[in-house]
Length: 471
Image (tube, rainbow, N blue to C red):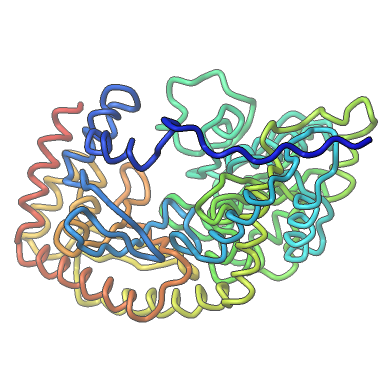
């Protein structure tokens, strides 16, 4: 005799009401962070005038409490590749919740992880298997573990100024001392300059290197690997029986105008590839490490080792549904091609301004990952102001540009790294010519103000005082 399924029960009176909670307590957001979370975040936001209240978002825009539209050129540090609240991704999540799947039983093989892995691997046909975690740093941690296990060697090389995450293993291959300071001892890894093949060969000659991990385009400063470097590095690594790991957490899924940034260089086939961020659709955290079959077989070498590397929420149905929906949208809406075309339009229009503004030193990047670098001006008056800022803290001028872009022109951007005079643009991959026009017009206005000695420099004095106070 079969047991009838229990009838669904209506929600209990007095249950959790998210809307009511936000209506009652939402105005306390900055105070709650100050009391219970990272207390420096609200302090920083208030200092630079970024302490806004955003009410809703859609696509590449969000709106503040006064109904003002803001253009997003940050995409949540790259997470919002499809913009906010894409209807296809939203529907997929509603569908998977409504399906009431028997998720995360731990002792079955649900279809969604297999389907997402299959789809991801079509974009890297030389790779065979996928491990799903929950974030970019988890994807990197997985690659580090797998490389050490597969090669039997302890050391992983990384590039100076790299960023691969902030958990302990990922931090060990982070090329920025500001993130590493105070967290030693870390794993025994070694930095080499990006593009320096000779330095790489010297380290490989020691015979203890498991892998080189590299961002094909570094997020900090937006520096691309020099032409030919990835191919040369791959050949050297394989000659020394070491692996190439491509960190595509930020650059992957169309960001640079190809599905993966390593695909800009012919013949490059990394042994392990890390992805995350945009795969989430901006909703459910997900990370993935793609790799060769023989590497996975080394890690999962017997049934006794079936759980030697796992993640409690890895492969959960909501994350897998989001990932599948993202890949479907990318194909249906030709997202990669749009990133390539729109990115070139934005980069070329900004590059055309370099000869106009002496404070503007360089514009570089690929696809919709663009770096705008500022440098020492020629004229005496501007040179004096620039020197004063540099003496207080390198990177203040870039911040002086970011602030009026938001406060005056309602465009959100970011400085590309601490002590860098570089703004990084990583907008949603769905933007088009209208958003390019809006950004270039606003940036031109800010540059005009900076060269005329206007309000940009008034804010600079505020930043100088703050920089001196923080020393």
